[in-house]
Length: 309
Length: 316
Image 1 (cartoon, rainbow over the protein chains, first blue to last red):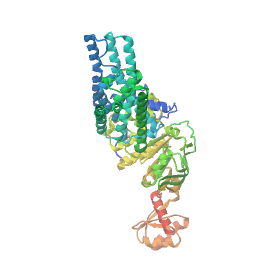
Image 2 (image 1 turned 120 degrees about the vertical axis):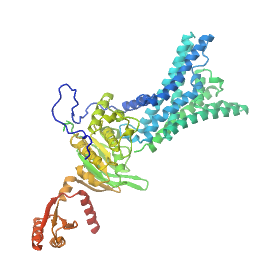
Image 3 (image 1 turned 180 degrees about the vertical axis):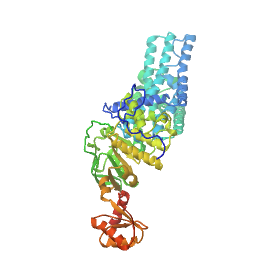
Image 4 (image 1 turned 90 degrees about the vertical axis):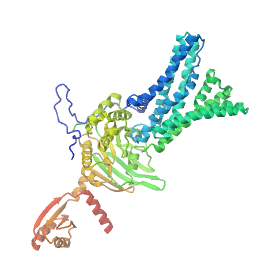
């Protein structure tokens, strides 16, 4: 036997201690209280995911990236409000729905930092057996992670939208218009958050090395934006207008923007042309649903195959 | 030991009936019929013997190809979530994220087992203390020794006060001292904490020390399921050492039908099937004019018993 501390030395019976200011070994205490169900388990995992994305409960260096990016995302609304004040404009220079598209690189960086954190650690270090041996399913785990990252993203985007609203109201822009725009912006932000979370988590889940995951997400989202723009430009130059209206939606940001344009009737971010009419809206909605459903299915499959245990 | 006031839901911790699991052409478990009582049950088998497959089925994570398995009276095929609420599992593999502290990890996992937030914190502090992690529990796990990591893995299996813990090769990678401590701790889980234990190992020798019951599987087939007390009682033998001419004494004993195993040098062991054998040892030594150095009742190690059994099987 080595001289290491005894493992929870035998229980000294009796001796309750005078004021509870001394730690007494009470022996192993059993628990007969409530054991909560899957709802609580999923909620707890979701909360832990959201906290982790913002670096809460993690080392200080994990807090730097998310909060720098949040700072960058929240600064422009103030500048925009100031510009409205100074130019005495009657509307915001950037609409609520166009804001995430304009800030797309920063949003992408945020997703790229957050998604690998959400899944890589558990996959890389083999933590999944510890989850799966508890009263939850693989689907519960995936659901909690997707919902957690979506919620975190939405919180950031919604804060930016809300700052934009506050700025607009301070600049005395028409309240009704602004509230309507803001509500539309929130809905758009919610849809975009879910879409980006699913895409980010799928990429992160197949690249268990965290650094690779970050790089893959940035590259993927930036490249697809570039490719979509290039193809759109080529198609419209050759005169394939219908095709040119669909190609931008290869880019997730444009897909959500296009839906916002069709469903909410707002203006497209930087004057893009999107598929027209109810048919176009339905196609866009179908694409969105397919990407989200497909991504979720891929995630569940990934955890069935590689989840360990 | 604390009285728990908890009546067991079933007399057995685990029961399987004709349990079979195949992976394509490979049969991992073949018509396993075994009952494991409460207390410490050792599950012994070489790597690939089917231990991990059995554990996955018991946790309700893998469907048997045919047959049934029950844990604490619950059906593994249909009551998976209920079983996992009442069972703790310590994986064999590395499974700890390095960048969180033991406290953070175990609190989180306690919630994942359905404990309310406050209870999860209290029980985590308690459980980590019981497994012997003190101040270091606030430091990131990445800096822990193998022994400390094994304790964290054990703590997360115990934190929700399960009725049964499944420990997969808990002594893997530990040095002899760490191994002893882990085995002692496992024994205490049963005797002091009142939690049933199913512990696997590929080493029979270490499990015979702590297990009340031993199950041996090989190639997915049940080899033996026996209470440790029975097994060691059956195998109680007498160790005999003489000053000289041990081989002649052995020959005399064999002549009267005694079962003798030569031990090298001037010692051997003999099974005291009846008093005549003991008399023959003493009488034979006197006849040969050699001194009887030692005649000692010895508890046979199970390892030897299984080895002998194999030998006799081969002879047949």
